[in-house]
Amino acid sequence: MSYNYHSKLEKIWKDAVERYEQGRRSPEGFLSEEELKFLASIGMNVMDVFDFAEDWVSEGTPDLATFLLIHDARRDYFLREQEGQASSHRMDSATLPAKSDEIEGIRWLPRIIPKARAKLRGELPPDTMFCCGGDRNFFQTTDL
Image (cartoon, rainbow, N blue to C red; front, side, top):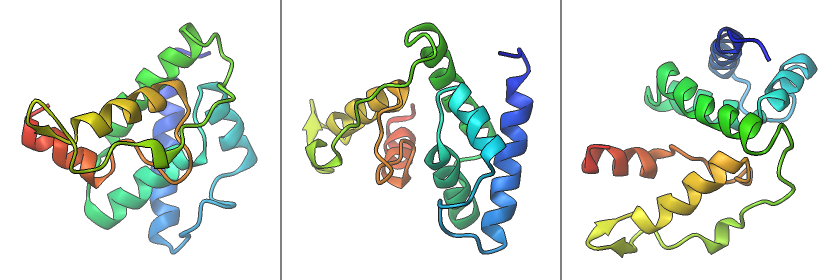
């Protein structure tokens, strides 16, 4: 894997943002086969790009730097811990703790922990985004 993979990932993100701005609002057919192949080689999939492009266009966040940092962690875990092999497991979104649940008075913490683990392992289902609006609110209010 090239040391400058992030340049290709940046281009994919910018192209995805442009596609979303042009009205392509479905993950089906959103990325080319070449883009999907590259993403798979670093442990990512179409939803990893689509969700971030959608939120960027709709809400102005998360930005490109956040996208790259989160997915660099995923890539590193995929290549080092999973030895380039995608997990066959998918987290069941219905098993996530409630949005109102707390640990030691910190709302959302019980929810974000399994989401972060699933993101790192590439096990998030298409209907769940790590760094969604609720996650971003958690990071902002806890200053993480």
